[in-house]
Length: 387
Image (cartoon, rainbow, N blue to C red; front, side, top):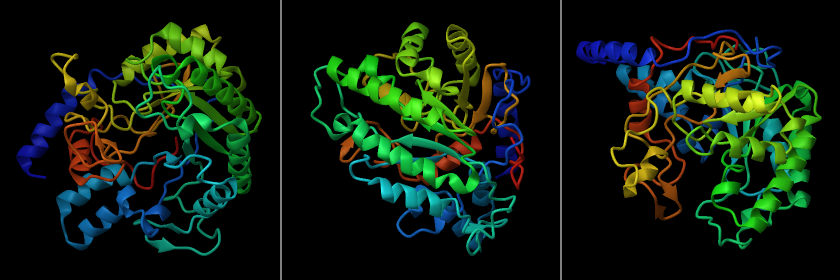
């Protein structure tokens, strides 16, 4: 990074920092306090998954001596992020497969200061560069293109308790080696679409399924579960509160905000606090991975490019580093739930946005942009600091 770029970056960071909420202290009994969050080194070594991980690009930049690229990519790779269990429905991904996958993933096969130290068995379990407390985002229900006329013709709506709950049981069993100590984000976007795009029949099925899942996960000790309810710019507070109640939020720790969005943290805290009070003091977490600059600024929000606010916005920057020092007693933590650098520009061959590759693949220009526009100073601590 040139001297001029560094100076511009410092000035821009100072300007944006004033919009962020001041850190207070962790919410009472926040389960993430002091935990050393797990980092996924192993996925970068798995055949066929390099396009979904920042690590292969970082290793290549180091080999080629591209110091500027290394510094930018380390701003992403060195920060613990949620592990998404997504991409296929539970009907396509049998319960036994997800159980084996999660067990293998948490075996800490790779770690070390560059995520290139290979371990055997669980010999790397104490590696501070890897951590031991995973944050999962489970997204097995798909809903792209749904609308109020849709009445159950797609695979995501045919997923029933009989499909989903055995999958959840295998997921729970796979966490046994770590005594179920984890945070789980349930179905990003899965609940907000109930009021925005599902038919009455599909909405009723979705809510019943989420209620059953929340009841099961909420009964697991040391598992902090939060169901996603979108963002402050999606549902109004009354809608969000009603959906959370109907989906059984009483059974779990609380709800998650901004999981697939880029909206400012202070907006989510104000929104989350209002909902938390209506729910009798439920707790919440906020995704800050890519919200340092807020959503895309559009002069006319009715223009056809409205979706660019949600996929690869040109002004997206990395937000606050994961922490349990939040601006609210109801907010357990700010976490990196979304995955910086991953493109989201459509589904299959259906391009929905004006820039970026189709599908959730790692896109280097987006990673560089978000790292350059990060709102935290310097480089993230490595090994990562406990939450």
